Image 1 (cartoon, rainbow, N blue to C red):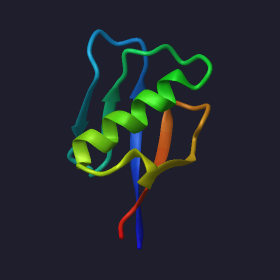
Image 2: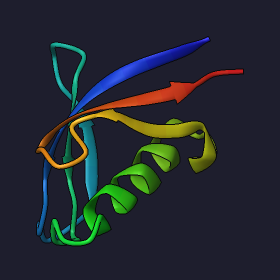
Image 3: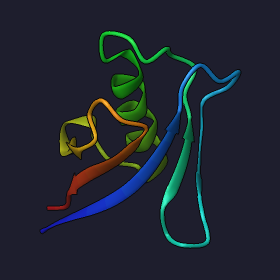
Amino acid sequence: MAKVIQVKVKPQSRVSSLQRLDDGSYLAHIKAPPVDSLANAELLALVARELGCAKSRLRIKLGGAARLKWVMVDEE
């Protein structure tokens, strides 16, 4: 079964961090610029590290070119 998490991304931040907000969504500060999918790749690596799962279990379901993204987490 898979779950979807909502993540608001702020690219070109000083540090990379992921924090859970009160409404259950996440706020991700990403060092990479939003160019050539660099920020998306860093986001998936950050989410994988924070959730303790492999990057191969994550994919961006919606919002690939937007700041508000839905990330699908495959749980097996």
